[in-house]
Image (tube, rainbow, N blue to C red):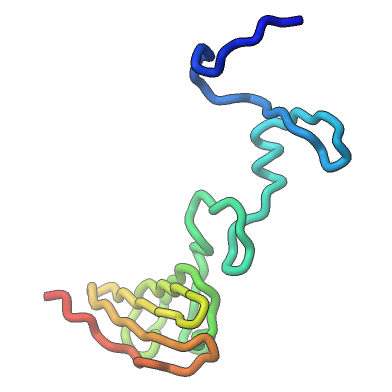
Length: 130
């Protein structure tokens, strides 16, 4: 039998394969790539691996597609969203409340707070950053 190596005596590095047990109890040794591809992607309701380019990043939103119940994420607005100009919409969703932050291309920042049922608590308000 091979000599055991103490954990603190092992050299550092990135493992190529992992060892574990399958659901049926048999031994498995998947690669890191196999493990990563089998894990779910993180979404608003699903815990999993965060995408390398950010949470739900890269979505585009137009004024007609915007509403108070959109998913959490980062959106790019190329039209005049609620007459605030073009910019980036950041949607943060908690259990009972949602915050929408809109950063325009002219560096204005607006915030809107909403209940989970879609009721507006505070409509778009300019955050004075001067």
